[in-house]
Amino acid sequence: MASNPFPRQQAQQGDVLFQRVEAIPERRGARPRPRPDRILAKGETTGHAHRLTEASDGLLVEVDGVLYMQVGPGGAEVVHDEHKPIAFAGPSVWAIDIVREYDHFAATRPDADLGENAFIRRIAD
Image 1: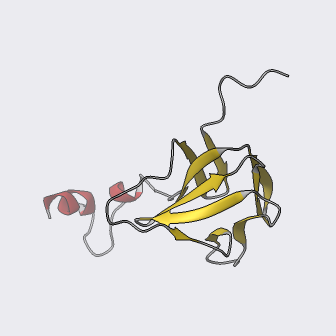
Image 2 (image 1 turned 135 degrees about the horizontal axis):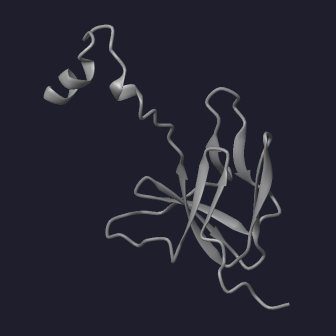
Image 3 (image 1 turned 90 degrees about the vertical axis):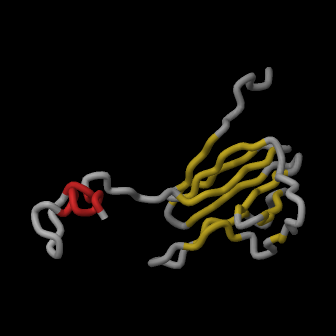
């Protein structure tokens, strides 16, 4: 079977976003901190966690506040109670981020404290 000439560059599981990167950055003075708990993110309300399975050939490392997943040749799988598992082929490196919800209509809604011209006042402040 021929290899895929266009490997996946992004993946998403719920609110966790995976972006493929070349390597974990080496920054002067930065100290990579491994995360042995294998948890990528934990839900605020449910407590469910996005995590690497025990069988995964993967390592979670945090550098300067950014979480990275380094996947070895054996591949890795990320699971969550409410989402389908995601398999990652290795070797590869992924930057992990949380998708933020943004309500682009919120800025145009009247604000109870500022009255009907809330949007104009926000810009002027």
